[in-house]
Length: 187
Length: 145
Image 1 (tube, rainbow over the protein chains, first blue to last red):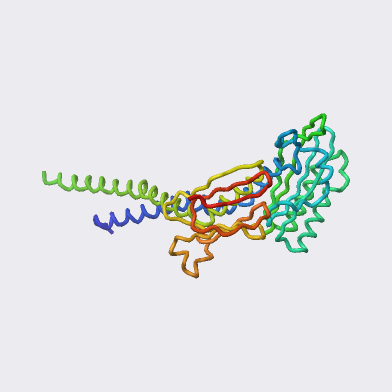
Image 2: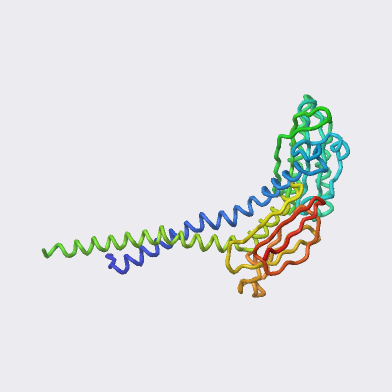
């Protein structure tokens, strides 16, 4: 079969349009639509962690707020408690702050407003894994990982575990530490 | 001489086809990209995500003022925060969004969660917004004229 000039041009236009739409679909729709949804939870987890690192309820104040420097006395009063002053309505967040110099650690959590009651009790059960006695060798991360796996298995939703370098102030001295944030989207 | 005419025609045709391919494959995607980018960035979903993230992040500061503008000529939105800490954005200008069956479409209406627990009144007809957070942790979103 021999194509005439018009048919060749039409064929090329069709091929060009297919390529053009493929480029559009690949570069734009996926970037804006799918990735945006995919990283929705990731974005919220990062925003939440940044807020935690700067909130007056947790950090040391010395005339001004010291970002990422936690106050040990404030942490003592919050240890093991549920925080209700702020938090995402669709996310359960568990926070552990560890002093890597003396091994001391504190934990607290933020409950989702939208979470059904049976799921609330399940994630609180998972949270209790943090309070278990540390395994031989004192690996706190084992307990954090157990909690992470427990929540991910119970809720079967996007769960992210992030670690941030922080400092802990004891008034006269400052220790190095880590903040572990386990962020779970409830829906 | 008799054979030269078809060669010139074929070469001309090849050049025309090459120009067509260049236009369709290289130029058209750029125009379409601008169109799709404009379309998606002005959607209620993108605006809700941006304002929700910025206003939540404002809680990390002592006090702050941020300005957010949707770079389109005609777009206008209403913004509200529900008692359940969800920021809701509705696109108002688009005729597509005025049809009942498309009102809940992501392009027309979207909700994103926010950290703060404060209900806010509905803001009508805006595309430039100011997000303010004071030292008492009050977050306020207003339309910039």
